Length: 534
Image (tube, rainbow, N blue to C red; front, side, top):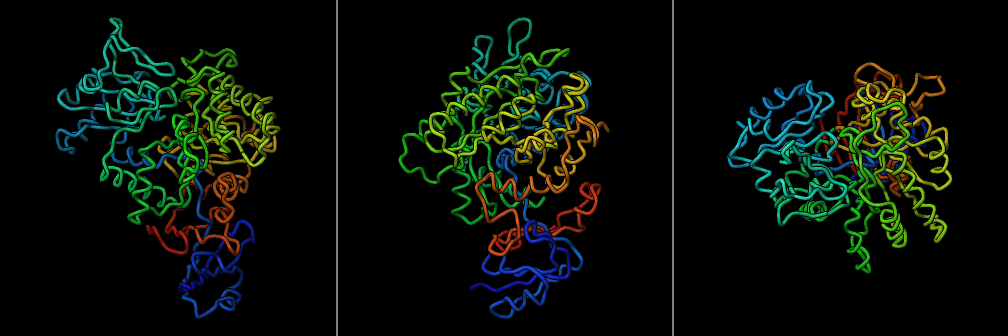
């Protein structure tokens, strides 16, 4: 038996046993909750004492859709989100280039064309102003694509003769030459001859990394997640690159996060060929359409009175339905990226067929993001037990441009209030690095639906169109409800028997909505061990 620990002198939200002043931790689990005296009496020996000094404890947060390695990639690049013009973007890259030893690539992450004065993506000509003798590569905030300079186009073999793959995008100028904009399925071309290839199964952000590169990149992503109190994650797009990184980190003892994996659908052949896959993935990740922020999502015909975005499907409907069916027959839940009404319909048709052929009530299928479902589709999701997994911080950061472009339709982006009213579980996530993981701020966004432009997306509180949820519901979305979706019954709460995963905060964010914007994570504990201290 390891040493016991009693935390006391603060406010402990268990999320199942109410609010208590003390908690006993033993062997990495919660052994008792209640008064400090109750906890000391429940101890097998003489426990160590930890005075919270008035601080607040919450269960460790669960991020049900995040990309830890891509998050590390972003953190190792220059942050382009502040850029408000192409010139500012180029200036940020030039400054970064001066700190990167040649011939290493100059990389940036997080530009949003809707926030640039030019209202367009950068081009290879723009990035050539940073360098023409080394690769310059910037990733869109959605994670769905890149803009690269002439050097990178040449190294990738992308020319005027390159055929754009289905479900992909290669922008071209009037002469047919590539402009440097490469999105979605076309990103396979950027990973090089020995890189991960996923064909038409999603945006390929799995750029090659050697063993030290994988370790450093995962370490960056993991530290960022721990710093905001996330203790359990679901990696929402796993290929060989991610699997190797997790295996290596587990072997050297550096993996602290509790990690669940969704294998990308390009790996279905391998899953079917393995009798006893180890480790068994949580499920299979699929893509129906592109990105809302990049305007490659297939929003279909329901956007009345709006300019139709240039979107596309990754698969023909029958092909996607077949892929979901294969995963279902393997006994694996599916998590399908679907933003528009038509893609959402295809997913629901697939799940309905699966349930009819083999009910498998143990399998909970998911729709990732689920940006613009109709009311009828939400009701159908409830019937079929399909769980939406939206990202409320994307409403805060990106809904202004959607409302500007699409009116009320854009304000209904991620209709979490409608999900809740239909009886669907409310699960919140970050999609990090698309929005940087920050569960407290995500809860604030889910409750208020406030945008950076000071709008309320989807209607104010009390209105029929309100898409906000109660604070308690939102907190469950990053703890207990998210944990249950991942099949975890011993994380997300601090009941006796649960794993001792918790965060220590400087204030109690449950007491006022506005505290969610300022509350700070001071410590993160996993299995009764402190793994982060501010």
